[in-house]
Structures are given as C-alpha cells and as structure tokens.
Length: 374
Image 1 (cartoon, rainbow, N blue to C red):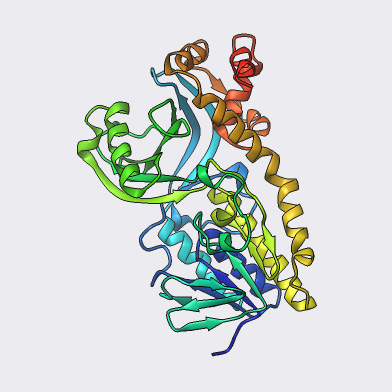
Image 2 (image 1 turned 180 degrees about the vertical axis):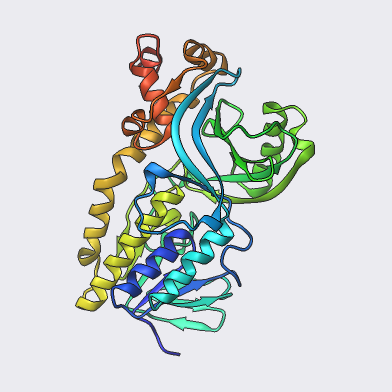
C-alpha cells in the first residue's frame, strides 16, 4: 500500500481542517477515521461562538440550527447574569460533512471505517493498514494515541466525560445559551443549548466514565428543571479535555491538535487543525519532520491561546471550591444584569470567565472571595 507524506488521524473538526490545510499546501495527505461515516453519530459539541471563529472554515447556512445572542450564567439558586456573546448552534453532521468535502476538494484522500488504529513507533497499524508516513497529525480526541509518544495533556487526570441529552418540554428556548454553575457537575457547570423545534440540548461534564456521566446528567436535569428528565433523549457521551491544559503539541514525526492536544472547544479546534496542517505540509516538503522543525506550530498556538486556557482552568478550579450558598451570594448583586461583549477579551473569549472577571473587578463583586482562594 502506498504511504502518504502526511496522515491525519481522526475526522474531528481539527482533523478535517488539518487534512484540508496540509493538502492545500501541497502535501500528499490521507485522513484516517475509525467511524464509517463523518458526523455520524452526530458529535456532541455544537456551539460556535462568533468571536472565537478564527478559522477560515465557512459555516454553510444549512449547517446552522439556530443563532443565539447571549449566554446566561446561572447560579445554583437561579441568579441569572447575561453576557453578550453571539453564537451559532450547529448541525454537526452537516457541518463536518461540509469540512470533509472541502478537504477532499483540496486533494486529501479520506479513508473511513478504519476502526481503531495503534501507534507502533512511527507506524500506524490496524484494520489491514500498516503505514509509516513522513508525518502523523493526531486529531483523535482526548484519549489520543499521541499520548503514547508525547505528553499532550498537562493534567490528564482532569479529562472528564460529558453526556448530552436532547430535552423537550423544558421551557421554550429564549435565544440564549445557559451555563449553570455549582457543585452539581464536576468542574462546576452544565450547559443548555437551544436547538431547532423548541427543544434544548443539555450537556453535563460529570464523570470518569460514560455510565457515570450519563447517570449524573440525568440527575442534573431533574435538579435544574424539574420534570426535564422525562422528556430527555440521550445523544451520547464522550471524554472531553475541557478542564485540562495542553501539554506537548509536537514530537519527532508527529503533531497533535484539537482535543488530542487538550485544545478544548470547537472553534479553537478548527484553527488549531489548520495551523497543524500547514506546519505538517511545510515540514514534509522541506524534508524535516523532527520536533525542532515542528516547534513553530507549538509556539504559534501558545502565543495565541495558552494564557486564556490557563486562566479558564484557574478560575474554574477556584470556583469549584466554593459552596453553592456562597456562589449564590456572590451572584445575587448582579442578577438580571447584561454584561457587554467587551468582557470576553478579559476572559480569553470564554463567556463564563469573562463574566466572572467582570464581577471580580466590580465593587460589588467576586474579587475578595476569589483572591482568598488563591
């Protein structure tokens, strides 16, 4: 079997854009995906915040379920603070297939249904494949094979399972995403995304296994909106690097991007995949695929995003130490307020962190309590 110059492992948004970027830059590129189809079952991450979309990828209208204007951050007792943060709720099956079509038009060859692959030295083995490409780009999620070669996650113990449900009859979506903070979910939050047809998608990060995450998510549904569990349909469960931090992004002959590198978030995964694909093509065309030659990709990513991820983890960890009653007392002075989109800059683009940063600096705010937790 012919061996490509670049093999991208995983048809995640990061992987799809990495394959597009590498092929577009002139590298012979294969995209390897364990599933027999892209976007099936539909991936759970569906929110694309406009201000975080630095990728060149276009979102076609057919892949947008609905648009939202604000994020409501809600305390355990129901105190609600709004943050202006326009976003699109995506049909991920349509969006991912659109990204695949773009990658193939750029010249990437997609091999779907490969099943699980394992990394043996610099070879990819499994499902009748035995490849040794010049360069591997891992975009295969939080449990990536890249972790057998490099420490892609600084806090691998913080990888948490998320479970998502589609919920009908839980109140008409009001054009806003809801982030509910509190001790009910590991890491301190659950998320309600409005979707088409008057329903919600509820996402809870709550366990160290799929079964635990699903059970905890069902309990959270009842806590947050009585009766919601009765109208809930499980969409799936998956490990997520949302509470870890990126570690090493490159090694000899390989790069990692997206969830495989701890780069949580659909929007950041897209642009990280593009940067990894560009770096991969440049390296193989220059005939140098050692870690030193790939390091510019890692430095580029850290300059753009590392500080924001570190701040998000720091505040998340500190907020999780607070009792729910204390969180309620801290949110109460701001109940009903709308915070402008300008706070997103202070929060590394993240609405929750932006809101907390704004409250911490306000005379009525969180500053004193958060400082005590340092």
